[in-house]
Structures are given as structure tokens and as C-alpha cells.
Image: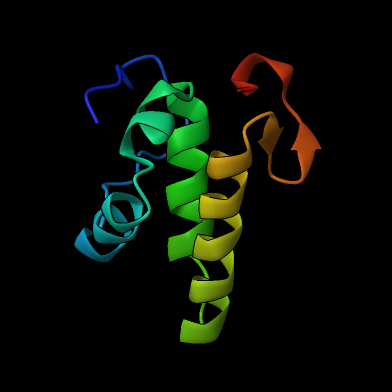
Amino acid sequence: MNADTSKLKRRRYLMPGWIKQALQARGLIEDYNNRPPYQQNDYLGWIEQAKKPETKLKRLNQMLDELEAGGIYMKMQHPASSK
């Protein structure tokens, strides 16, 4: 989680502990860290902005599944992250 976010022009989100734990539990920290800073930030903001806990969990699981599969970002093809 040492990505350089200094060039982001949008709001920066901090990694909540429960998301970090989920990444660690699935062994996806490295995959997360290999994503561009804007993607890391977008994932965190998207998850945290959900109002209902079940929506947060659904979004978290989508992020984890996309990181695990590689080549996907927010249900879109992202060849640069292919495994």
C-alpha cells in the first residue's frame, strides 16, 4: 500500500482495516498493490461510499474477485492487470 497517490486529483481514501484484512485473507495484497493508484483509490471509495453494510460487502467481494481473476477493473476489461 505504498502506491504514490500524490498525482491523484480526486479525493484520496485510506485503507480501512476490514478491507485490508479481507485482502490478506484472500492473499490479494500484492495484486491490489500492483494496480494503479487511481484504481486502488476508486475501489476504496466505491466500497466505503455504500450506505448499507450488505452493499459494502457486495462491492468488496466484487473487488476481491476482480483482483483474483486479473484483467478486470469495475467489470471492464483491463488487459494491463491480466495474470
